[in-house]
Image (cartoon, rainbow, N blue to C red; front, side, top):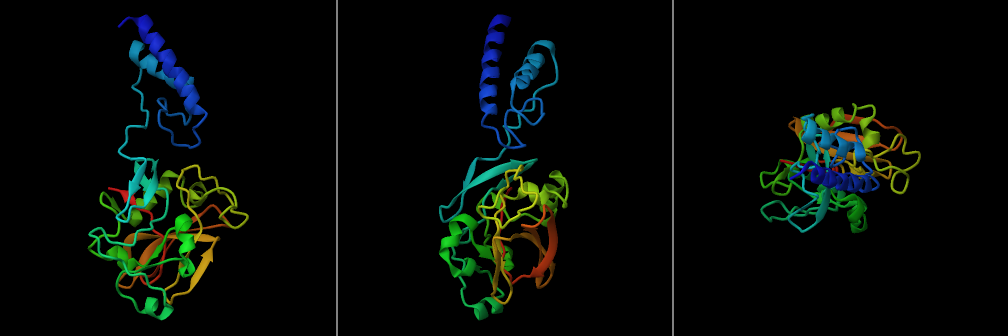
Length: 264
């Protein structure tokens, strides 16, 4: 192929990249050959420099093993997002069955919830109308169950994997803001520091404590890790409406929190 034809091809590539740039709304973008955080003609120039002059090879960040969606046992389809080297669900888990098809019990009565030492889920305020936006809440026993709550090829992330995400986003004092949905459609004002520049799209799903009480819909979201702290408590991460931080703590395994799965 002649150099003139190569140039024609790459001019076309440059035009397509410029058009794609108008749709890019994330810090982490596919096709960013020169890794400057944007899609524009400089990416095409970078590629041309590599082909004709022997410059550095492009790193388009679009050949990762992160599918655009994933599907759970119940047929719920979730959007996904690549953040650094990790592929995350962009929505909270909603599944009502373990991976082998066995049902996860839906426990609505407070006293029954408090007494549990086996896996269960609930819907905030026992109201199915919240599920589409906020997902379901699960106790830690459902995560521990050997039948696996996460869909095939995915898992509940460890505390170390959560920390890798948080450090990639700049640390605990700012990562919560980069993970929260911006604005106040779902989050209570002021939703301080929320940019969602990571694409994680954390929503304020609230929680259920170990005695069955629901709390904080609209003002916080809490995610289980896969790690226990002691025999009856486990680690979680929580984000609030009032600041851009994300906090780590531990709680009784009987509590009900949201789950985000991470690709294996």
